[in-house]
Image (cartoon, rainbow, N blue to C red; front, side):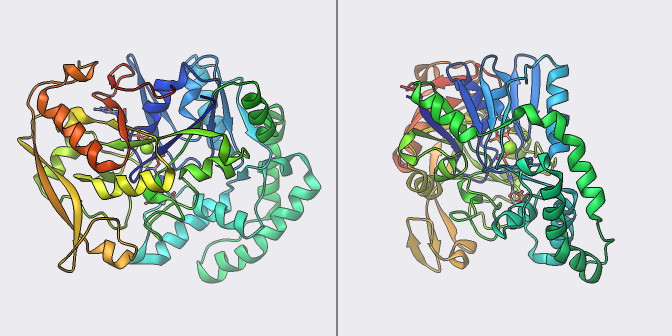
Length: 428
Ligand code: GDP
Ligand code: IMO
Ligand code: MG
């Protein structure tokens, strides 16, 4: 089973980091293929808690080679900060490989992110403010800076000049900010070059060779399907391809290499930032999920919007990504509820709609149609097999599996590395 993709099946923070960590002992390479330090993955190993942003979660497992592939945008200062902090905690980061084609997030991207959000006013996206959107915009606009440019001062200077040309007019004349000089950007980027040089390689070739040798490569998606720039709730999305197709374009392997696509879902739903969210709760049930599930962002600390499980979204995700297996996390958070509503379809202007509506306006005011499933009160955090779960928890999983378009192969029952019930081997 050589190439496996993990993707978020909702709006992010489903527990992708934990799912990656679960598999990491059996893989040779772990690849981040999209996004940047907008991601936040919390992984709990024993008493230790790690918050990863730019580095793939698989870095926590000894022996795995972590790769930051071409589809990622890299804030180098953040990268060095994470590497130093992990090293100080005894994690071996020496094997990290970075694509020469990955794009760089610079100070002007961070600035543009913040000022454009401010100018959007009520229509703001609620970005993480990390410069992600502006860095991808430059990439598509063909004025981006790539990792390889850091090793050629001449080229770097020309590219920074090109990138700042129009931006400085905007910053000064529209956004009322100071102009950014070419020198300050070039100087900063050049100061990183020596430390980066040994890590920057042709990662597409490295991964191809690994797959040819029959080694196992895990592609770890950041963000999620509903935040994908093509398939998510545009414009309330991130700027990268967070779906399984992004694993191919974002890393330089062929799509026919991918054997398995694992979608991560929470047993309920959360979202950070603006945009439609049909099952969102504004009452004490939402507060219960936020409190019990510790639903506060790993990256920005913002309280996450919380709601019930949405089966049409899972079906949509299964379709868009070709999900072969779901991992459902945080089932333990639902313990203690008498009954648990699950969204099975939407009511759009009085008409029942079974799938995610194609029109964003319809999705904005879609009302969930709920089915109530019986809850359970037993503590499930110690469950390790499906039979250990109380009957109603088993039935909740089975009901959701029947609605969601792929089998649920593992179930999270707590934040720790071992707190998982495996029903089907994810790599087999
Ligand atoms: P990611 O961005 O998809 O990697 O997810 P985050 O790390 O942002 O958010 C998931 C949170 O849920 C983390 O704090 C995890 O430690 C936690 N978590 C993951 N799986 C479970 C689970 O099965 N039960 C509980 N209670 N917490 C979990
Ligand atoms: P992980 O990998 C949840 C959201 C932001 C905002 C929108 C655009 O931890 O699941 P951006 O800064 O990317 O331009 O913001 O996307 N967002 C996330 N929400 N989890 C994430 O990552 C996210 N990364 C971005 O809140 O609504
Ligand atoms: Mg997260």
